[in-house]
Amino acid sequence: MEFTAGGRLEVRISPADVGKRVSVRRLGEAGEPGGKFTDTVGVLTSWTNGVVVITRRNGECVRIPEYSLVAGKVVPPAPARRRGPAASYAELARVSARAWQPVESERLGDWELRASSGYMRRLNSVLPLGDPGRPLDEALSYVRQWYAARGLPARIQAATGAEGTQELLCAELAARGWEREVSAELHIGALAPIADPNVDVDVSRVDLSRSCGEAWLRRYGRSGDLAPHVPKVLASGPSVWFASVPGSGDSMAAIGRCVVDGRWAGFMAVEVDPEHRRQGLATAVMTALARQALSDGASAAWLQVEEGNDGARALYGRMGFAAHHAHHHYRHGGA
Figure: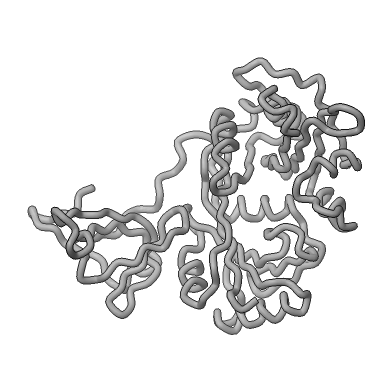
């Protein structure tokens, strides 16, 4: 990466560039052998008291002493994806939110406060898609009170890694003591290759339905004690399909869920009984759901992969999915 002007390294950024994507080079920590340089690329989210904070694509905040900077410049937004559908963060955030509709919600400016008796973080957290309509500290106070009234910890879901994401908000939350609990990536891809994979797959065992039965719910890992609102949440969405592969007795060998919303098909809850793994059942479920989504008019696909789930990442990568952005759940430390 070129930082030089006339053969000299230059720091061509300042606190006025907060909010912009930058690339910086710094000298390694004092005492490090060889005085190595380290490059960091991300959004400049803070420059105060001699400390530069850069938020990387994955949400990690890198704190850099100002004195260690040897070069820096503003760089263009992250390059567009080279494969798959084009999509903005705002579009995907709204589509993925409609796929999991909360039991209760309230608007706070452009923020949506969501609650579902604690079932799933995404359904019990704020989705901020713009200005809350009041100063940030006042908005955060209202959020804490709103969730406390429902016996829930205050959480905010914020995204990083794409144009229009919320690196600045992530930095503001971290500075106020909100703790990042868990991160995930939203991946997108073309739908047709999922419906017609480059491997032999038997979809004859996959049953599709508009509703989830008791056996499906028992296989669903997140359902817990099957609170009454869980089936309602699972059935929410513009056009929902459930896939199941019968196992022995009344159990399910594999399940899946797909929500069709315009051109998008969202895949979730793809789970396989441990005794039936490595039989291609996850691929069969995805294929059957993709074919149904194609017939419903969809052409693009999305799904979410939690941080550290390397097995799922590899499977979906083979299907043509690639990361679009990351999102993170921040929890208020006093909750």
